[in-house]
Length: 424
Image 1 (cartoon, rainbow, N blue to C red):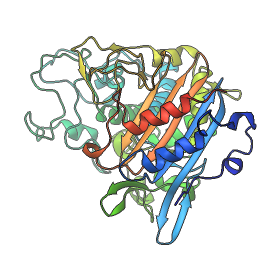
Image 2 (cartoon, rainbow, N blue to C red; image 1 turned 120 degrees about the vertical axis):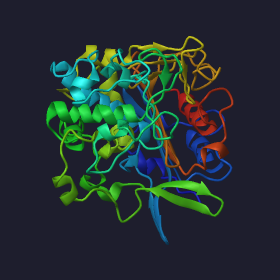
Image 3 (cartoon, rainbow, N blue to C red; image 1 turned 90 degrees about the vertical axis):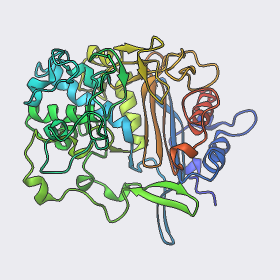
């Protein structure tokens, strides 16, 4: 069954030229093939948007957002996905507002913001800075858990019960890489960033992000699943198993922290509560607005949240791969503050950090990979191009089709190649 929305209906505001077919087959047909044949079994959902000069020139919505017996909700442009690690970019935008206000210094010891001393025991004299949290060079590690429930404090991650050699230990151990020198992807770092945002702003993380980032940019969604303005738009994420699709997160009825639990929460104690690293629910409409905000250097439709200098600081490489100074399963060759830079040069896996054949560089952004979903938020401020997508219903990581020429998955390569083939 083909669940793809008719382009004429879903994209009524696009011109006929913008929806013209490619020489061999239409982009819709190519995206249909990604949805139904990209993996060994069909994906559950695929949503994708291509921007050029900062404006949408193509959109695709296929598959289903939710299934409940005989009832199926199609994917639409306002469908909210738990977008995984693209959340880190939005979290960083919120933090950079506090940096501009002089309330946070990127090169300051995080201990002073967190309210407790945070040091890698192997390097007790070396401060861990906010910048190191943002660029994954802090020497912190995720361990077995990097999100804590209400009633816990992020300081609990580092108490005496967490010992070297145990899965719950959250530092690198005897690898001789001091803080600030070696890249290892770490979700916990962004839980600490969320905690810093709370302690500095005095607002609960989810509310701060809504009031200071999402609402000013008119982006629907949020980090608190129980406080969404339009919960009916929320997609359930699925993993692919031999028997079919298995819900992994955001299934109905929705589950989250109750009002009573949150009323007792101490602001600034546990920023992991709403998953700053991956818990944002956002639509393709929202990602489009976010891309335009970044392309336009911190402003959107007359609303300025950040200066061009802050956007450039996020995009400027704070770490670059030299052949031995980092590990990452993703296409990593350079990293700014929450942003990958796809340089086209060799990544940590020995493959080119290139999204499609013939790539000439310029894209920066972030990917997402969690709960059966792969997502992409990639933009080029020089020409206003952007490649935005969410694909859901993947099998376990070790069963996914690997990329042919990059460290992206094969589905991600096919999405990029299809969108890049669009000539506005």
